[in-house]
Amino acid sequence: MFKQEKPELAVPARRQFLKAGLTAGVAAGAMVAGGRTAFAEGDEAIVEKKDWAVYPGNGVDAAPYGMPSQFEAHVVRRNVPWLTADTVSSVNFTPLHELDGIITPNGLCFERHHGGVAEVDPAEYRLMINGLVDKPMVFTMEDLKRFPRENRIYFLECAANSGMEWRGAQLNGCQYTHGMIHNVVYTGVPLKYLLEEAGVKTNAKWVMPEGADASGMTRSVPLEKALDDCMVAFKMNGEALRPEQGYPARLVVPGWEGNMWVKWLRRIEVGDEPWQHREETSKYTDLMANGKARRFTWEMDAKSVITNPSPQAPITHGKGRTVITGVAWSGRGKIDRVDVSLDGGNNWREARISGPSFDKSMHRFYYEFDWDGSELLLQSRAIDSTGYVQPTKNELRAVRGTNSIYHNNGIQTWLVNSKGEAENVEVS
Image 1 (cartoon, helix red, strand yellow):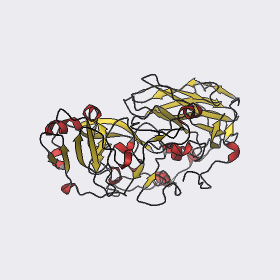
Image 2 (tube, one colour):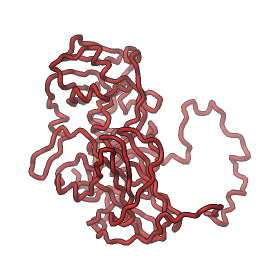
Image 3 (cartoon, one colour):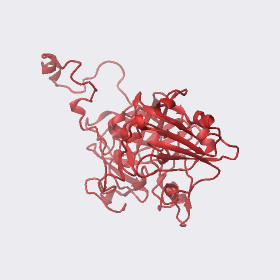
Image 4 (tube, helix red, strand yellow):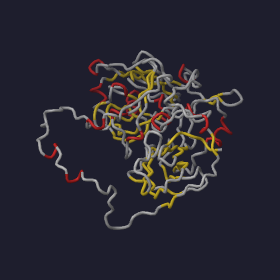
């Protein structure tokens, strides 16, 4: 499946492996100090009288639900047709190269479905808790909203994010290589409150959330995690969950692989051992080089990617002041540091992390430099609060092989040529 190529997304074979000895001709950190610089000399647009400055615009009733500018219509989720050929078992990707900051707008959060998008009437919604509990219970949406609620910012990453890159550079653009992720503010009820209401028996060790969609998604989650930081969320970024994100309620499992964040949550069974259901046996295990598979690899390791410049976001301004930006995250805590390389990992420079730093959340980083037009091999490397350092792809493959499609957090490389165009490559 993963050997097929779509021409406009595939990377030319000649760029698959490059020697990392490239010397990037840059004057790192050299910035214009003080004063004003005419970045676009001779540009008369500033003195032209435009229509928007002459005629009144629309009133407040023109768009009851606000939409992006017409000039941002290209900023959308996209799929890879040959990756998921049908609309039922499907995935589309967040346009990371078009975003900044750490919050993903609701309409751009990536989607992954196993049975299409379920349309659940909140008036008919019910959440059951059963199994090893003192009192099996059923909650309505109104019941859930009467519990103490919390707001938390977390990333959600599919375990298969970057999975197509295990054997080599394949998809050209960070939207496709890293776009199965988003980062939002979740509002909901800590799961421990619901479990406490039902009364968990002393021999309980696991919970099994179940989705209400046609796929009947289930995963086994250790009770310790469920009582720690899991939530039943019904809002994201302040508004109700979108249907594709599990409306009206979903499970939030911070820092752990996205398929455990069961959408359209309808039932949570409490038990004394894992259930070994379809999604934790046939899939979401990591096939090693010796043919054995790692299972229960829940945590998402520290990872980062440069979003600009990148294949979908080339350098268009020419030589001079250039801003590198990207995102980093870790399922084990915060990101303490991000380093950036301009020469394929030969030399590293500390990037600037800007914005709030939350546990199990995205972090935004920047690095500014003066580009002289020489070829660049751009990389980023994240270091999290546990001291874990994001590995190279070769380091990862030395341990895991190339059979898996899950949990690929290897360092990504973009080659930027003298025209500012970028493509997905690997360095040897």
